[in-house]
Amino acid sequence: MTRPFMIQTKKNKKDWFIQIESGMISKVSFSEDDWDGEMLRLPDGYHLLPGFIDPHIHGAFGADVMDATPETLQTIADGLLKEGVTGFLATTMTQSKEAIRDAVRNAGTFMKQQISGASLLGVHLEGPFLSREKAGAQDPELMSEPDESWFDHLLEVSDHSIKVVTAAPEIAGGLSFFSKYSHKLVMSIGHSNATYNQALDALEAGASQVTHLYNQMSAFHHRDPGVTGAALLHPELKAELIVDLIHSHPEAVRLAWLQKGADGLILITDSMRAKGLTDGRYELGGNPIEVQGMQARLEDGTLAGSVLTMEKAVQHIMALVEPSEEELIKITSQNAAKQLGIFHHKGSIETGKDADLVVLDERYQVAMTIQRGDIVYQKSNLRE
Image (cartoon, rainbow, N blue to C red; front, side, top):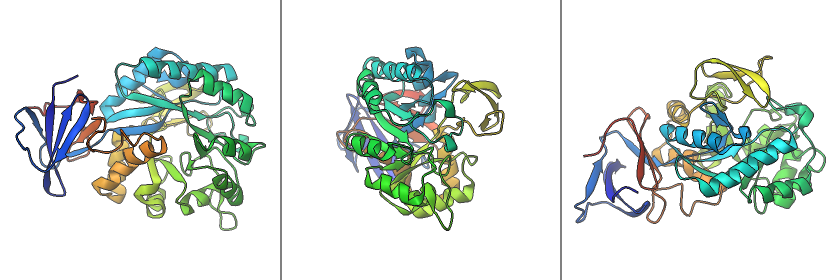
């Protein structure tokens, strides 16, 4: 743990002082008071935000959550600090029951033992309770109806680290599955061909989120608005959004912003193991993937996750809709923290919360990442 220090930054044209001690934010004020310790004065135009939370990431830097090893999760966690991410959910894929079991068990064990890198906050179970009609890059042959007995087993072997479940409510048993677990988990509609009315039934059954808005969900049609229409029209549903400008057209991003606003969106990367690596051939869920530039696709051209960073997602959203700093905080950390039930200690800059912070320069590039009071990444030396 680093020694106590204070950060000076400007917010709404006023000087703000954030005091950090023992890994926590111990004070937020408008003056230095009698502070005589180390001071980190951010240059004009820089931005101090809560550390980013990415609740949907399959892999990065050559590692994949489904590899089911602690080394894999450590690789992902360490690398994410460079993009300002201080917390993430390890996201699974539709594979064999044994592979999914091993992945969630590994994540649950890793959470108790982790000592460095972006904090693993839990598991996002994406599959196998999905629609074969909206499989995307996942294996439709391994998709199944909800099996509550097996899911309860997953909860147990993961040490109850599963926090978000993506499922299709229209498949047999889907609605009862949403209803049974929505009181303790974030139930997210995704990889779903549900009608608009079926999506509303899922909302009634406890759905509180949709997975990667627009992608692998029933599209808006004027006679049936589908899951997309339900997501855009109902503020009770938070919407994940991949702002790589490939998964969603820039104008679709603008539409989501106009309809959902900062309170309704959660920026995600949905990244796979090729993130941070060079173009070439990789693997996702047992399928060969070709990565060229910012695009990762199956051989048939289907998008297969992304190589997006949260840093780049922030730059894109700033260029497209110019959110205020308060709005940017909501879509990069606060909304995710609230969904995950951890807003009491993460997701905002307030006294008593974890000192998980990211410093962005005037071009919204990550200049520094601070986790629980430790400077764990810095692009250049900002310290006195």
